Image (cartoon, rainbow, N blue to C red; front, side, top):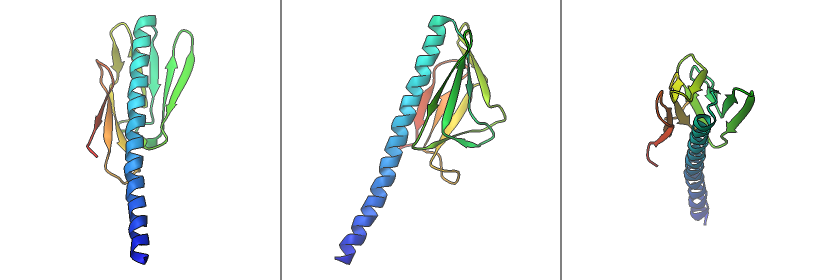
Amino acid sequence: MILSALLGSLFLCLHSEVWRIRCAKDECLRLTQWLTVRYERAIIESRHFSLTVAGGGILTSQISLTWYNPLVSESFVIESCFLARLGNYSLARYNPLYRTLSPGMTLSILKDSKSMPWGKLVLPVKGTPRLEWFGR
């Protein structure tokens, strides 16, 4: 009886980790779609925007977007994981005329500061955002 209780607890712990990874992947897919829609909207409306993500490897759960002409701010908050961006820059600007994000960035998707990345969100200089998931 004690053994079955311990095995049940172990299953719940393992299952919750699998569930958290699945939720993180779903949220990152939604973030990728959210950014892609913002890129398309910028092209259609010929509006520039800037993205703000904490730089220097600092973990964050939010990406902020600021539209220009008129000035409007939006943000996307992730609850299941953290994003980390290497490099000193925390601001990138999207130009709809050339369809470029400068500078481009790669965001690592992490459980915490000590874990290996679950995946990465690539925001290239030219092109659209893409999510790369490392299995699981």
